[in-house]
Length: 422
Ligand code: SF4
Image (tube, rainbow, N blue to C red; front, side):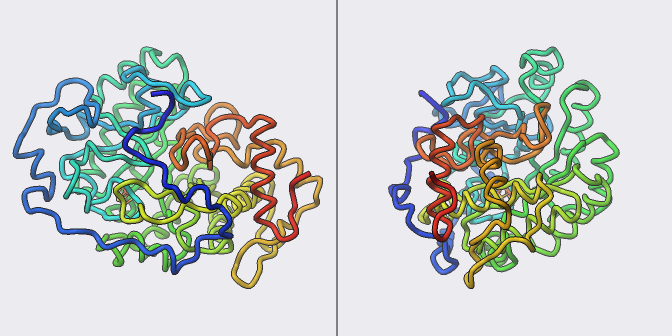
């Protein structure tokens, strides 16, 4: 394999049709989930086979899926597994990831059913939890003690700048997150931990406990940029348990407990919201002292939205710039202008300042919790998590001059009268 492209993840052919200005709500309707055979529900197949786990489990290698559970086992992104040295592979234009993204794992999997997510509950029908693709890649499962032993001994060569625990919607997830976090902070002092939380099962006290144990940053995968998109993609619309108000309740708790620069929220762009919807959430989070971590919507294979178009690059680029201006340049949404459909038409900054931001390229890199390089450069670089290598949405590396020319062309198409090319 020449790069981080999973062989069973074909690139949808609509990637070449980037003339749409934005993904309108009426086009972004998830399909209905199918029936799940009774024997597949709640990890039934894996529990019935009850194969004992042994060492690292690589998904889709034609082995029976073992009966693995956190906190003994965790899954990790393919990029993290390559960086840790437990899996072989090459990544396009980058040799490692700076973030060890861990995912709690259970045969029952995530009990939520988010329409854009490869881990969603409806996939029980066709694929065991530990074999599901998530943000376009496989997630190998590794004994957690082995992970800690390698990093504590410096086996990653200092390449990890951060570790992140992704909770999922599961009754054990709150307790097991505490166990995984505690073990890490006791043995690994040089790699700080972020939590990617699951607000649905959490209280303010849970947030406080994670802070007390030693988590450095707390994030919430709000994902949707308005209440309607939230309900449609991860609430009642797809028989999923999440609620917009509960997510915001936990964001507010994180802002108070973790404090400024120590919390954030994930937002996905291109699921049927306007630019104004996205940028107003970015501003709201910034006003509380946090940062937004943005993802370009990409139709994840096997998800309930795998038939829908990815976010058009012009929309994605202008929202990336707006988010960077607000999060790292002290800019404000009130100084930006939008058209009657809510699409951004003016950044509200001087041309020289805009050129400087574009030429620096940082705005177009993957956004997330910072590493050791700079406060505006994410450790969590998620190589090709939201796009194929031939059409990169979030750059997992520093952009070169050719990359900058490409994003300028894309940005120019997305602004009335152009703004950025030439
Ligand atoms: S809660 Fe998270 S992991 Fe579970 S289906 Fe939703 S987005 Fe996926």
